[in-house]
Length: 102
Picture 1 (tube, rainbow, N blue to C red):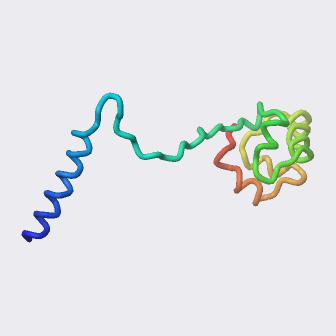
Picture 2: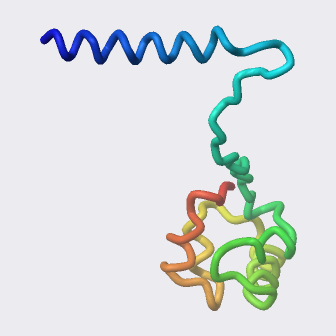
Picture 3: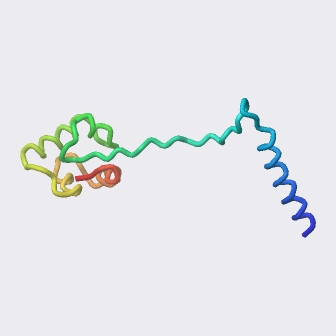
């Protein structure tokens, strides 16, 4: 138990020493973290060709088909309606569902 107490005290001392040594000219460096890009939702009823081609498995041809289906049949009522578009299968829908909205 004494060893654990000494170890804990050493850790606390080392941490406090780091803060005590910091000067205004040399601020304490925060650990680098990866910056996550914000998730941009794509509304399938408003999206452009450029929006759709950003999705996994969607090229210009499939993006055009999604837009054409929307022009001919009206607004999509659910994300699953994309399955009615030729070339859009369950895998593409599953891969992108988290990024799609109505």
